[in-house]
Amino acid sequence: MIRSMTGFASVSREDAGQQVSVTIKSVNHRFLDVQLKMPGALGALESRLKALVQQRVTRGRVEVVLAWAQAEETLREVVLNEHLLAQVHAVVDRARAQGLVAGALSASDLCRIPHVLEVRTADAPDGVGAGAAALVELVLGEALDALVVMRGTEGRFLSADVDARLGTLLAFVEAVEREAAHGQAALDARLRERLAALPADVQLDPAAVTQEVVRFVARSDIHEEISRMRGHVEHWRQLAAGPEPCGRKLDFLVQEMNREINTIGSKAEGLKATELVVGAKAELERVREQVQNVE
Image (cartoon, rainbow, N blue to C red; front, side):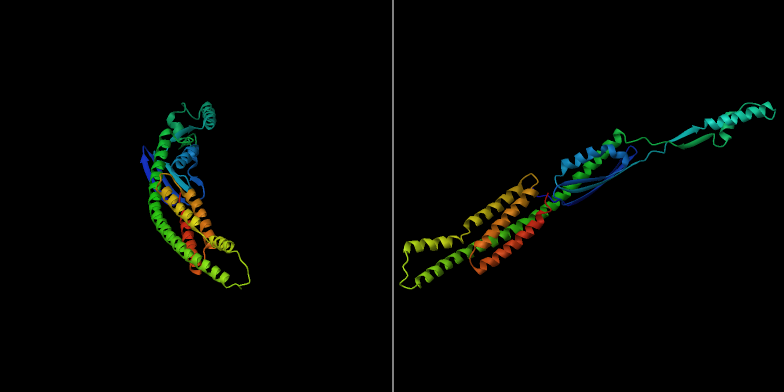
């Protein structure tokens, strides 16, 4: 299966006072490289979230940006400054002993004394609860689903383009095969003409001469390379139609095709054959560029 390594997805969900947003961007890479950017409170979930990505994606640089927020009202707490209250109480006792004040401190008195009672924001608990963790994993899963769909869509366009280029490449190869056959025939004729033009006093064994001519012409035979090229293209199409990601295997096939074309170029006879080989190599290079983005 041909699936692109390029994709983008963004999903947001809110549930039970929790809001989670996930944005994923992926580009091509030789291996799988997962980068997570998320709040420190979600640090305990990092390994689980990376595992989710690895289950859905096999190659590419995948950048996941995750945001998490709680919509609940801010928690507050009341703090009593006991040390200050003890000092106030001691001063009031001395004043009462001197007859300056009467009665004990009341609750309303405490509320009116500055800094004795303080209302402040409570410290947030570390990490996230099970509900928030489940929501984070759910949203990441939905974002990965969307990413895989996009990469699959891109892959279908990429596959169609590469298949057309493979057709062009095979046309070049078949043209080279025809030209090489003409070149072999012309080479055979030239060699025999030159041998026939040798002086009469030069003694040659006709059987040995014929065998040497055949051997020399056979050096330009490219039928084996042509057959392997067709086999590589057939293998390519089987991989592209299969269920598994095949980017690395296709990259290897491109290398094998390049070797075959280089061998064909070194063996094929005729100027026209050389021109066709150059065209085939240019088309194969375009295929190689496309394969760099296949998962």
